Image 1 (cartoon, rainbow, N blue to C red):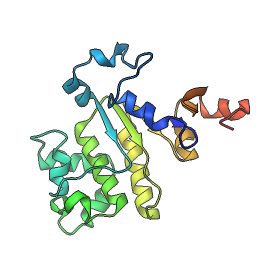
Image 2 (image 1 turned 180 degrees about the horizontal axis):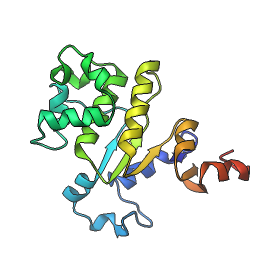
Image 3 (image 1 turned 90 degrees about the vertical axis):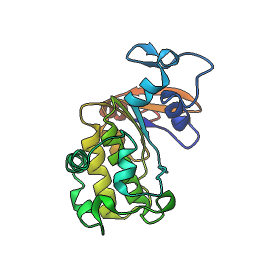
Image 4 (image 1 turned 90 degrees about the horizontal axis):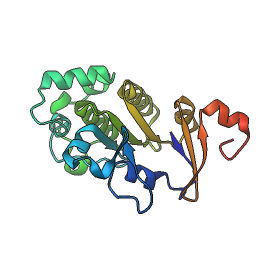
Length: 200
């Protein structure tokens, strides 16, 4: 988890990790390999970013999920829905996975757009997942669904969460505390709390 005050550099570091920008000093490495040495198509297959405001195409939920891996069958999508434990939400939609989302996802709530983005990430099945959490301003039930889906999606892969909530940081194996563009603390939640430093 990456934590810090607004403007501390969390989103910038997330952008560098995803190679939406290159660092001017130092290197970002993936599996020990400098990111600038990794082919872009390879990086996009192995690393997926789920942002606070995911972009959705004016099509169905299934089409938006399938964008992550063209040729994905409905049966495979159903497996992702089951794996992320959001079947109750999909079943409650007018046309299930065939429900249109509207332009930029306008027919869905902010939380539902986030669920579609998580399902799309599930279809992509990346090695590394970068999450910019977006559970603020969603209703309680949707927040529970998003949290549940995130937990399942994170299993078995490196997940880097730009954390806006203490509960997210507390669940992480390692917490990076940023301030003014610098890493000021690094360690497990319990150790950082006991240290009494900026994280505390």
